[in-house]
Image (cartoon, rainbow, N blue to C red; front, side, top):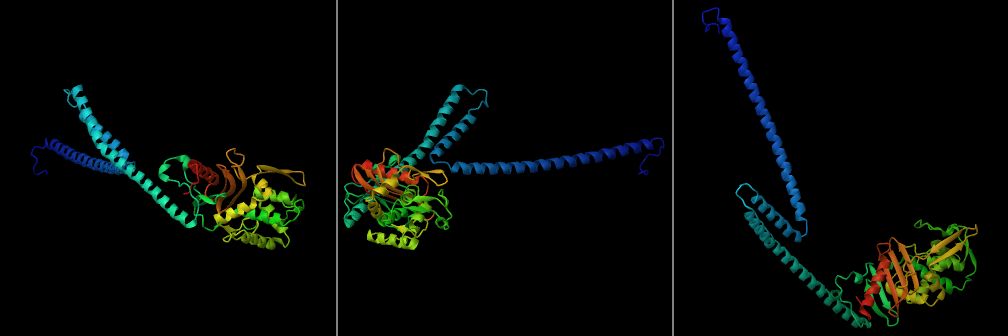
Length: 421
């Protein structure tokens, strides 16, 4: 570099200093440019990520809107149209007047109404189709019932029409999986659902237990002990009746029928001549005598799922039990106090929640439950001055069977005459 510098020694240092300063300035500018380029790249990446996230959120919102009712589409379109109109009507130009804004708003409303109309039309068409389907269902139901009545010889003076009662909550059909309601005076079927199926009957079994005990002729005043043999080892169900308790045969019968006390029912069978084995044989013998051809009994409690029957067979059992005033009284007694030898007292309540309701006149009642049978309820009652048998099996909820009894009653009372689904 010294070759190009002037030959004046005095100015050489000055020129060298200026060249060094120029080189430093050039390097600084290059560094600043590189830094700015890096910042721009980083900002661009952040913007892209933000844009992608925003797009994903919009797609999620779109899916959520798509899941709403079809009637809501008209409202969404109207809101979008109004929003666009408002955006256009924003004072981007200072010369925009209130009159122009009002005109655009009116136009937006007109467009919104126009877009909403097809939705309402579709809804109306679907509603009409639904009503037509209900009416068709009612016709088909009545046709099937007429054919069935002709084959069975059942007396049927009226048929329940779904179209006549569509939308009426008070006339909702029963939810139990199996149901049968029969007018015992005319043998007419008022309501039925899966009524020919053989099902586990749980503690409904205790009605047969009571029949065998009473017809066995053993003294009702005889005192019997509750022992460890009466403990449920099949399902390990609990009991308030302690081992060592001594009660009369009638008290045990009362607890078995009213509160479905398993230890009481087992003690009754165990103290039968010949024990449990002989007692179960007597139960099946009585079932055959009553014409319960599709029923089988395996124990006096109903804890075994092998205790099975059909709704029609259970109607026969209810009719047989109604001939014994003691069974009628014990199955409908609201509550009872039992005094034990240690001085303690136990209060038992009836498992049928309909008892005590003034709207019901129940002569015989029994509930039951095991997993295989579901919640069950059978009873003899009077509806519109007729003696009626009600069979409800395999209800899901703990209160469904009782609500179903109310539903059946309302269906029947709404007809004013015999009805059948």
